[in-house]
Length: 250
Image (cartoon, rainbow, N blue to C red; front, side):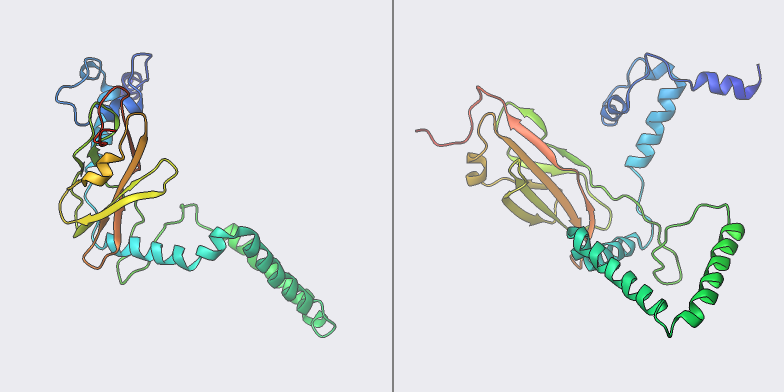
């Protein structure tokens, strides 16, 4: 059998192969899964996942993130009100067409249309087959857009007791971390900033963590200028029913 066929057969997915969620659970596990130890395909998937999770940020990557953030802020009104933005663009197009087909504009409208059609056809025929690159064009070196995510440690899921603190992994280049604790509707309960990778929960907040009530939290890494470098996924935990909270006795 040719080498390529052997490789394809070795990396083929079987019914016993682990799902992405199961592989992710093995990232911090002290021992590997019995299936992974004998499956080249799952070993390769786990290695790629570890490489992605532990990848170091590129040089000047914080500047690219800041550029993207500023660009989104400039378009915030259009993003929040797409109907208004659509009407504005439509009005501009109608105004352009009105000027184009006005009596004074008709004498150059058809030559301009022909030139535009020729330019579009030339661009289509001569365009490169290579996929376009996304660049922020900051300085002489192009910055690559990359997903920035801060990894949390805990708490998450169902808990047997009220957590004492929130913990996360350090993020390269971060000067401070902003922590937010929220209700399930994302309304803020409490927030704080720290230079460490954990934040103790104050007693008044811990008193609000009662059995059966879901609590959300998220942490954001900031550079020395207060710009966002990375944000974690929103984590959720809930105190199991039947366990005591820190609420005062009635």
